[in-house]
Amino acid sequence: MKTWKVLAVLMLLCAAVLAACTVAPVPMPADDSMAMEDEGPSGPVTLKFLALADDDQLNAWREILAEFQQLNDGEYSYVELEFETIPFRELFPKIESSVAVGLPWDLFQADGPDMKHYGFNRVIWPLTDHFSDEEMAQWFPQSIEEGSFRDQFLGPPIMQSCSLLMYNKDFTDAAGISPPVGIENAWTMEEAVAAWQDTTVDENGDGVPEVWGLRWGQGTWTGDYEHGIFRRSNGEIGSATYAGMGEDGVTFQGYLDTDEAAEAMQFYQDLHQTYKVSPVEAIPEIFESRQAAFMVTPDNRIGALNRIHGEGNFNWGVSGIPYFKTPVCHTGSWHYGISPNTQHFEEALEFVRYASSDAGARIWYKHVRQLPANIGLFNELDEYSEDGNQRVWLDAMNSFGIPRIQTPGYTEYQQLFAEAAGNIVVGADPKEQLSAAARRLEGLVRKYTGWNN
Image (cartoon, rainbow, N blue to C red; front, side, top):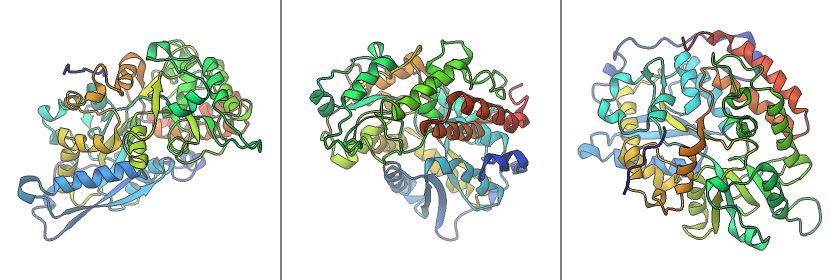
């Protein structure tokens, strides 16, 4: 098979708290002195792992752990994992606050764009000296860049990502709709609205559809990964709208709040308030439970469908992502992070080493079914071959995938944009919300000025 080379806070409770106070960076060890404390276990070691609440991912980690415990004749058979799982929007401030107050976490699940934030604020253990050149070559270059800050490698990738338009074939067939095949034929936003309206079904006429036309994005949250696509898609490549942020990483006025960005977010509001093809109050597992005809999502949705319905028992298809002026999918995904507070550095490091290896990534993919970050794994997967049913996600990532904004202020940005998007859904003025978010954001991220010089 051909080898595919893919082109590659503290925000405790609210923004007001962030504006008023800054947590002092946690000092990082100058050497491996903390690791030296683990010279052989005196008993079982339980690694505390702060992670997203996601059954497919947890099942993957449990199997990875079982294989890890058997390595080298059971060298790490004494290691266990203890998870604390929380919703997506709570994960990022929880990581920082836990480190700041000294909670004894060992591992955490970190989103790629947040890695620079964690590096700047020293709430993650740098791993540059703990991975060989050969190990680094396992992963796509963009994943390494996303997981690095100031020439320090902070944590290996778990997977890569790109969101496209999945659909329930039973619903589209019933409506007489044939979504376009291939990313080059993707609908514009205006064309897609007609399909979303035709697949919104309210059989009893009570105003609450039994089947909604669309869920844009995973889970029940709003955030930059998928909802930021609206804004950036309404700009030409090279424009301020498409960039989303100034080159200095701390300028957002004139980027986040352009007229084109506000126009795009008005369309997002209209999907809920005018066209009424998406529920204002998001429904958990709306696509998996056959309550939505279309969903903008990475290919991890396939893993969820297989878990819930059994492999091959859900009739799905995929099309290119709808766009205004420029097709966009955001790349970057989860990384492993080791907390500076760990008392079990050796065990945490070795677990991360195995989990992010080709062997660990293979187990992860079996459960989650999202684009791997491991180059070699693509050579084994028929799904990403020229005729594979998931090849379209790979093609899209190659063709128009772009990283989310790269700044140590991403955590602040994510929270303020999510707040603005949530307000827009329920009817707030998009231009006012984006302008207010941009102003507040610049105040919060001023401390990062010069970070990339």
